[in-house]
Image (cartoon, rainbow, N blue to C red):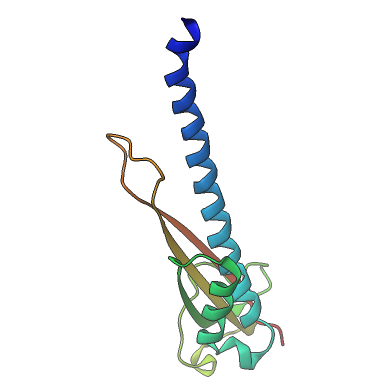
Length: 142
């Protein structure tokens, strides 16, 4: 009798654990995709401008069909404070237009990824889908 009363609660908790695990998995995949895309871009100054290559690298890493990927690049002035490339990257058309006194001009790549998560089970009062977001920013190697 006690088992029959507790079974629905245990099943609901089990389904909740599975859904939370799926959400964590999607979030990790989306972040790994963004990291792989930006790692492709920062190899050289040539790959730093290859936004399509960065997007393809992020999509092939994540293995999620619903994931979208956006790659951008920009330049900023590094004054030696240790944080030259921050999110979001300032988008510039040319690194030569930036005035940088007391530092050096650096190029930064950024990849932003998104994926929609549809729960396996629909619960009343909860959304029918969730969005996992990821982004990565790195400084281009010289």
